Image 1 (cartoon, each protein chain N blue to C red):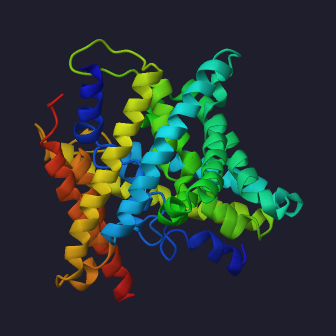
Image 2: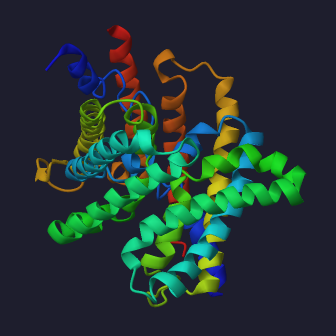
Length: 196
Length: 200
């Protein structure tokens, strides 16, 4: 892999991390990270849509008239989201129930449309796929970290493996804990970014 | 009574922003000033109520009739996008002053997941209010639920903007500046709203 291609892939993890740096897609980030495994699943679901929609959009972008490009992109994204909904209903029905509304809401996740508009519509298919993979894995990583923090504090377990008996600080599994955990993680991220 | 319960539940107990996390991006984006937050709230109330009414009817009389429920996501997002455009054009013509107040916020609303979220919620989920049996909402209940939910969103947005205006004047540690301190504040606000749980 050439250096430039690697850069396209790697930027999603730190330099342009969608969650901590670009602050995109906050709704699923906060809502679905009640545990590490939920965060991971939501991240992978978004990754799936992101990569496929990036590939298709970079392929059709030259053919789409400028005036209607946003509606066309939204239809492409919504199509992949619907495919994902079917696949999850069939193969992982429990996870589909847990993530619930946030699977169809990937359509309005600003990360997906943002990458389509800012990257895929101007670059080739391979680059766009790499960009989708990088940003998607960056998003997955952020969600998993946030989910892990909330699960450790909130229920005293990690990926479902319980290391303390009884309940944790329940507030971290509920809504306020999402905001608090996210806020403090962001502080940590800023601090590391500043050091480098 | 039922309507009253729906309203209390949607505004306070299950506040769409502070308990369900829908519409977080604009929530963090436009909550710097009370005046912009008020404008955004007005636009959100308007669009959510209208969008839910239209998508409910489309779902019931078009998608369900022809067995096309799997198209809900695609159909709803297109309807919402078209609706927002239409509202923009109509407002510009019939009420320029209202357009001035809401105008810049309208295009933003298409990607506000609260709109699609509420529209999908009312046609896919069963609701229980005040110990009654779980049931799908009918048209009247859906519109009231959508309106109240949007009011709850607006209220949270304006409350939060008020808090952020005060935060501006405080000496916040360097790494907390901007979004992190806003998120922590939001967490405390959400904690306050947890006090309403169990009310309905």
